[in-house]
Image (tube, rainbow, N blue to C red; front, side, top):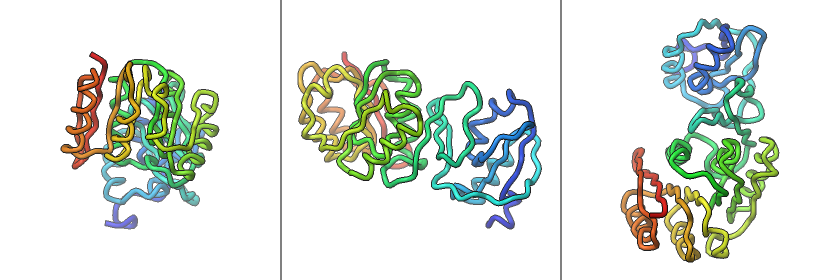
Amino acid sequence: MDESTSGVPPRLAVRSGAGDIAAAFPLLAGLEPVSWTPDGLVLAPFAGGRTPVEQAARLAALELPWHPEPGPSPPLPFPAAVGGGVYRRSPGHAGAPAGLPEIVLVAGEGFGLAEHPTTGMCLDLLSALPDGDALDAGCGSGTLALAWARLGRGAVMAMDLDARAVAQARESAWASGLDARVTVHRGALGALPAGAIDSRVVMANAPLPAQLDLLGVAGDPVPTALLLSGLQPDAMDEVTTAWSQRGLHEVRREGMGRWQAAVLVTA
């Protein structure tokens, strides 16, 4: 199925009241909103790189009236989405409806921009964590750090070894208006002082070597809570077992494909 046979136009307009559009926005976000109009929302379903098959399914599920809309479809660097109660978008997407928290992610090479399973699971599990200042360990694009701050959960220190990811996360914090609550640093997790981990909520969507580096700097006291992902089942068992020996216990685990995410809290 290609765009010409999917039945999904390259641009379409949804006409409905603000309340109806807000209620349907988790679905509409996946159809790539690009601008608001006085009577609705303009969408460019293929502008963010989604496939005709998935966009045909989304359009079929849409219960609001729509019609094809003339005009060009601007290229967007990645798809928009709603997850964990936050709308994440590029600067070229339309803004969120009133009442929906949003973060703005600039284009770049940091991990976590698109709908990778680990990013989605982590966003969904934010609600299982206690409030407090956080560390986003191996922050990549900064998605988790920005979502935490936007939801009012606490201030965040974000850290990554990749200079490109650090630059992207900083620019996204500025674009989101969160640069006062999200500080981004470049460095290796193994070089973190224990004080950067102790008594914080730690989010680590990172591969096993980075997780082991993080374990190596934990002291006493330990983090108040952990959100771990970027791991397959055997590696997740290894890491959660190591944290359990430091007084944290697992309260929730989710899986998607070969990836897992887990929440641990202090006993």
